[in-house]
Amino acid sequence: MVYSPRRNLMEINMVATETKEQQEFREYCSAWLKEHKPPATKIPLPQAAYEVTSEDHRTYLVDWQAKCYEAGLIATDVAKEYGGHGHDKFQQIASTEVRRANAPYFINWIGLGMAAPTLLAHGTEEQRKSFLPPIFSGEDIWCQGFSEPGAGSDLVSLQTSAVKDGDNWVVNGSKVWTSLGHFAKWMLLLARTDKNDKYNGITYFISPMEAQGVTVRPIHKMTGESGFNEVFLEEVVVPDHYRIDEVGKGWQVAMSTLTNERGAGTGVGAIASSESPFAAIEQLIALAKREKRNGRTLWEDPVWRDKLMKLYERTEAATQNFRRLGVKELNGGAMRIPLQSKLTGSELGQELHQTALSMLGMKSSLYIGDPNAEEDGRWALGYMNTYTGTISGGSSEIQRNILGERVLGLPKTK
Image (cartoon, rainbow, N blue to C red; front, side):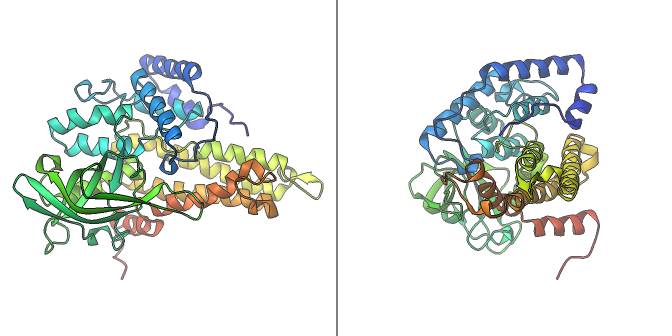
């Protein structure tokens, strides 16, 4: 499987509008990645950071993230006093070049994509200076403690409680679908501090995963992987200086975090997957040029070729739309573009993999480890993993409701 490093239309447009300094930085990133991209691991990495469970993989990825941070490819636009590199509008360039180089993903994607933007927007000076540098280097891995067994898409129904005890809070409850909880040192934790106020009774904390009373148990998915976890919190003590923003403001802070999870981050370098949509469509076309039906390749079949070209157009449109995230004025108060990008991007990824399985026919049932499986079963594994994208960060149904109600002004569903 070969990834073409050619620039797509989005990248060509970006380069055309860059300043001399930005162009020089892009050339630096490209050259640095070419020289320092690490060799592949003996056992292939999982398709995404949230499925990493091997200690060898963790060490390899933490080392890679630390090198990228030191080189200026992570936290590129973050102020130097918080451990960043102090540039302006350079991060998107660095992230684009990392993807284009087909380099390994960054394991601390929750720290980079959710914790760092949340701390920058809502944290205290002490919290930013203390927590951000080890997030950027990958030294401290973070996880997200939002969803609960009875509060997934309906997150505001969460019941994990935090009770004030002097200068501390005592937390009891459980969280579920906690990616990287088995490696994490810190958790972004939502807990109920007032059971009588649905929205204003939630407070946002930084919770230490190594504290007494924290138990982490893996959840095994249909893929056979276990990057997700259940986390049980029993009489866990969280100091008050680990609280983010005011008591009762947790819901508002959580919406800020979820906005970043859905694609509108401040841009500190969060790359969680080894594959971009544009890489996926190119690999899909390569597959069509190998797979045959009735003596000719699928690429030679006008029906299949038309289907692939339509997917190619949608991929280009989604990529261009994602570029608009950097224009704050286009997003509006409801964060239209991040929500739209998360919705369409996750469903497009699912359709790309589903198309690959259709191309493979009966061979699509062969899974990882089968010597006859196409590309070691990556398309079947990828298809099952695409459901993570259409569910996490708010399911597709939730995204459509938000877009309809907050952007289009439609009445609430009953």
